[in-house]
Length: 497
Image (cartoon, rainbow, N blue to C red; front, side):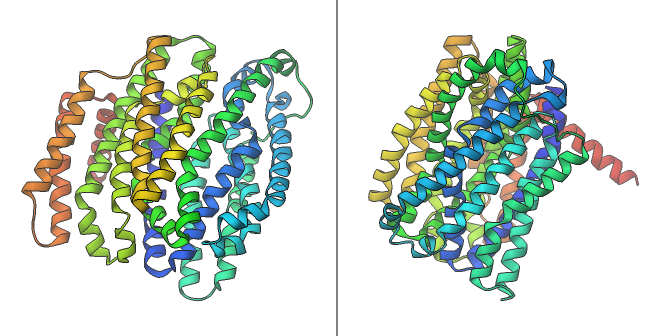
């Protein structure tokens, strides 16, 4: 857990910087850029993630699962697993590209209300290609315990480059066409920077020659990958179906509304991103060594840490949402999607509160269940999302997400508890949830000044005092307590200067 804690603190700091830049981008997009252009950037991401899921054939998960064996038994220059991953993924990319060409007429019929998306659909190919390459090399870097720099590229540099493009567009130094073209090649910049980094770290070594480890594990890897491939597709579809359906049924302007409010709720997931990136190779090694004590420790601590941070972030957002809209003078169109934040936010808390259960299953010998549980998720998510969008409009995806994530998390929790006697919750979990509700009630009903700036400051301060005070005092989370004391030490050191 020391590796996870030390690197997750650094990567969490980087990720929060990235989210701050992303918040600026969301504001600039919603304030100065036509909603259709903003929506187009979201549908580029959503389409490319589905593109990636099909093209990669689930090989990123294969890499995370089996790379510890190559790391233990082969010198770095003879490890051929990543070479296999690249060959399979490039083949997959060509197949998916051919599929979109064959079914282009169907795509045009489905997205008649999003003419701008159809006009620039061909730019999906470079965007998806470099996203695929970057993601594969990102996982390659994680498996060499070098997670901080790839996280910096994905969370900070990508958003910083987007900020530059928005500013150039706003000041009319770019035409709309030039902006869209430049946006389509953002991942190309990230990919080449990551290559240079790996080269400088003397890590960019892999082989295309079949090794003895591959020959020994070939059957297991093929079986594993066939199952995981289906699961990765289901997961990608579930995560992006809302944007695809909103674009198809309501057009790109409402895709922008969905993106803006989804982004706000995604801030809650920051702790998960950094913890998961570092936990996966550690969990894979723990399963290899059959160290159940280490797995239980990671499961329990990740659950408590992510629950506390997700509740803290969500409650502060929901407490101050109306004031934030008033202060920023946002387009009323975006206020229509505010309940997306509520329902998505609660679903994020449920997901994060369950800890790294998905990663535990994905790196275990029962990884077939990952496919089954994702199949259940997609079977629920797609019809529910379509049903709720049809009847409730822009709020529909949020309600669908909450229902499906709750059932999905419950299924995975029950599986780990039954199969391995692993479960992350204690009475402290209940105390933390009740404390968050108490803090929200105190801050919302007792702090109501007319001035919105003052309201944000006071509500935030009161909630943090009521919520975090007892958690730190009673040391309910070791990671939170250690982070708190490190923060205090840094402040004291700064004040002494």
